[in-house]
Length: 247
View 1 (cartoon, rainbow, N blue to C red):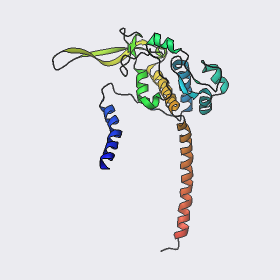
View 2 (spheres, rainbow, N blue to C red; view 1 turned 180 degrees about the vertical axis):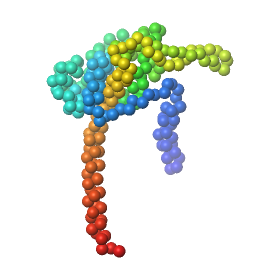
View 3 (cartoon, rainbow, N blue to C red; view 1 turned 180 degrees about the horizontal axis):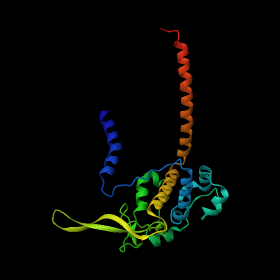
View 4 (cartoon, one colour; view 1 turned 90 degrees about the vertical axis):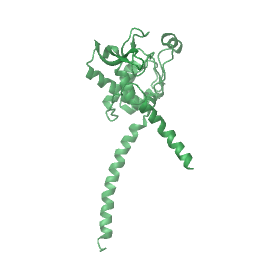
């Protein structure tokens, strides 16, 4: 029995240890706030205008987004639905799979639960870290997913960053160039601070997308805490009444 328990503990802890010990750049903090409805609405606009050209989110329907985030149906249809005219349809990709294979060499994945598999911090870091790389077919690369087939679809907003390298030597004295940091290159329409705000909203929407019931749980949690607070006062007064004659 003890061996079984230890095996289960190892199975739970090992992925965390491996993730912590893995190489790669440090993740940036997304600081997602699901209580910011305006931010979620903006994230939905960004996702449906920029991401759905290549990526689907087939586990979510347009009318669920409209209902959860308080977006009027007419605005949803006019500004956020480009692959269907039925608000009850799931979010399907605009690009044909055969075209994706030809252009990118891979069919872009569905993003319904990417925030749950990758984590909000990883997505936020990834979206902030594209840099110019002439050796890549798309002209850009990303330190959080080197060699990614995805182009920088948000380059008009952020601009294009440049990579700065430094030289390192191995134990045999061989030199190699290693990415040091990214610096501003071609400017975009937004300042860096504004672009970070936009990406934080986009990531927040993707977190919602992966688990929309979170919004319901948060609202219910506040009501439960308020109820328990009122109940605590009533129970305390009852306790005082029952024990007032006990010495």
